Image (cartoon, rainbow, N blue to C red; front, side, top):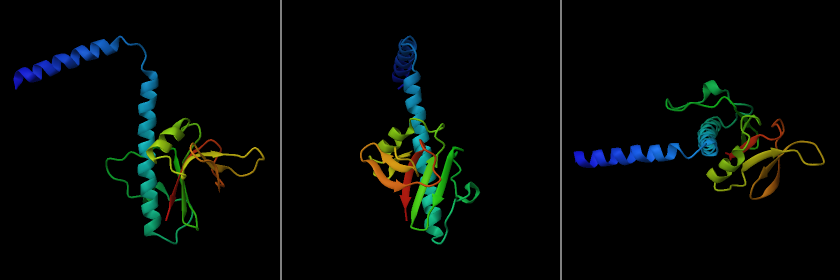
Length: 155
C-alpha cells in the first residue's frame, strides 16, 4: 500500500512541475470561475423558486434574508430576483459581474429557452430574453438591465 502512495505522490509532483512551465492558465481559471458562478446562480434560482412555491401569493423581490440558504452556500451578492403575478420568476445578475456567464448558464440548463441574456431590441424599449439557441424569445424583462445574465423559473 505504501509503495503505491509514494508512486502516486511522485507522479503528482512531477505532473505539477511539468504543468508549472506551461505558461499562463488565465483562460482556464476564468472558465472555472464562470462555472462556479453559474452553479451559484443555479442554487440561488432554486431557493427563490422554492420560496415562491411556498408563498404563492407573493409578488416582488424576495429578500435575501428570508431565503433558507444551506450552511455551505455562499450567495454571490450580484443576484437579484423578481417574482411576477403570472408565476414567472426572473433571476438575474448585474451585467458587469456576469459578463460571459450566459454561455455557462445555457450549458448548465441544457440550452433551455429560459436561460440567456437581457437584450434591448434595436427598436428600443424594454429588454427581452435572448438565448444562445433560440435567439430573441420575446419575453419582456422590465427592470432587468441590458446585458444581465437571466435564468427564468416558473411556478
